[in-house]
Length: 392
Image (cartoon, rainbow, N blue to C red; front, side, top):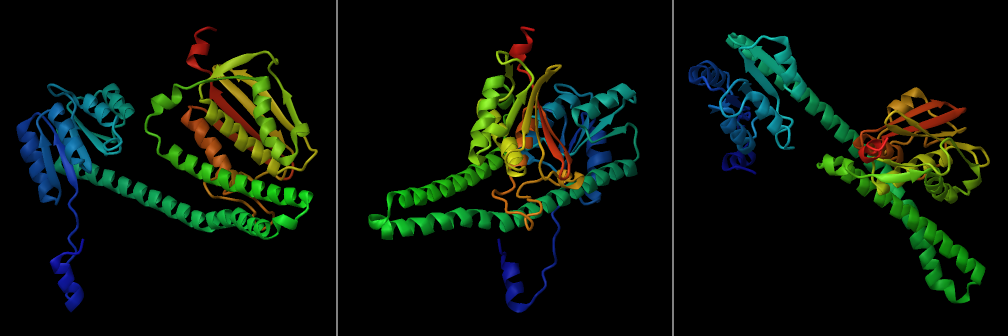
């Protein structure tokens, strides 16, 4: 918002000094002298805005209300100890990322390790020097600033990729839809039936392409903003060799490559419940199969191998296609397409990103092994559902 002072500055060229926003630090400590004088007084002298709380319960409420930039907390306190405060803060997206420094009179290594395992960023053992406290705070803020810069760079890269890829991907099918529909409106009365059917096929294919792009984009956004991981991971789907082949076949049909599918491992009648929802599982198979079909030649085999490994279900999909270099595998990201200038690619480069995101959200993994111009193997590993394990 433009202030009166700022308006005068714009009108008359007056330079208004920049006033940096003071970083807010919450200090949770039951020792009043340490809290108010040794920490609060010192930090205010350093230019920080300091909020204090006399115990963990009060500190937790102030953290939720004021959302500080950093929290300094004692461990042993009445009503709620420091570990409990940290654990409670990590349950909320608003407070989970706040840097957290523990103060403790305990120098036991196991106590420190316990706090670090909970997500603490640093420890200071009492008694400590004021400069030690300041160094720890500065170190946390420097690290947070670097993470924010990195996150902003990733966001900017994503914006650039979206600006480069999405307009083309939207316009291409939309141009076909508009062009063909205009022809149909003008000439449909005199058009032979076979020609009319061909035009409608063009319309249908382009509409499906546009619809898939929109669905993938919306799914990408929804996966990036999932909060309730417990509900997500409570879902399961019963899979079998027949069911998985059906999912691969539906996608391969788009490329007229159903006959190229070769499924191996796990008997036909063996079914097992894996910890992923059916829509996410179907989408995962769709994207892996789409990539295998798109980047390998027709009439070359696409091998699908099914197996179990410990408490995991493993699906491998191999093709003898163009492959990827190690660097390209490392750089897979949203709206990233490799060697587009060498070959026509349909899609926004979201497929493998969606597949990897889906398996990771379900505590699984997607690995890619590839030798350029020889072969590529996608290996999906997903956990077997808990209810399935309880019967084995």
